[in-house]
Length: 271
Image (cartoon, rainbow, N blue to C red; front, top):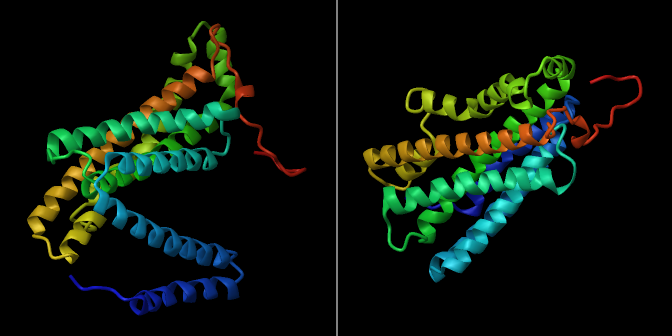
């Protein structure tokens, strides 16, 4: 494996700086975001590397559990922050967080104990990277699904209330919106599976090959990861969107858009 120095990373980072400068000169408004994102990536990944180095040495289940908990809590915050119309209060935060916990941790535990069968199953070398990939993709899927669902329900409020007036249940009236939310949330991983190997070599496979691993073993691990991500994301979105459908309709099947946080709109504009 070729070891990278900070000089190598600085050379690579110069391209990002160049991109930010071009954005700034053209007045596109993305230069600051590009530099901030790059700086955050450097700081966060460096800290993660230092923390994981210690955790790998300890091989302690409590340390692995603490890291997993921190990852989950931050993922829940990101899910809520990425929604245009999030649910009011902490219920919206815990909905996305609990959905990701059940799906990502459940699928991850299955992969570690049944598929990989490593001993101990919480070995940090496998548990933390696998959970990170599952949580990251599940986070994106849940955020996309909840946002698509709440936006669709708000947009089609009149049509949904007409169905409710005709005797439809809230679950039935929101069926098409749940389908659209699931389709939106699963699009990234479906595209990744469809294009893997033909259009691109996915990240984990690339990393193993660059590290000197056998290409066939790298391909097997990438297939495993794609399957686990698809399952974890799908289960997480189903749980989150089902909860949202339950939350937006009361026991008398009335639509309760007041449970969504109001969006500030500048005067003279409509959404």
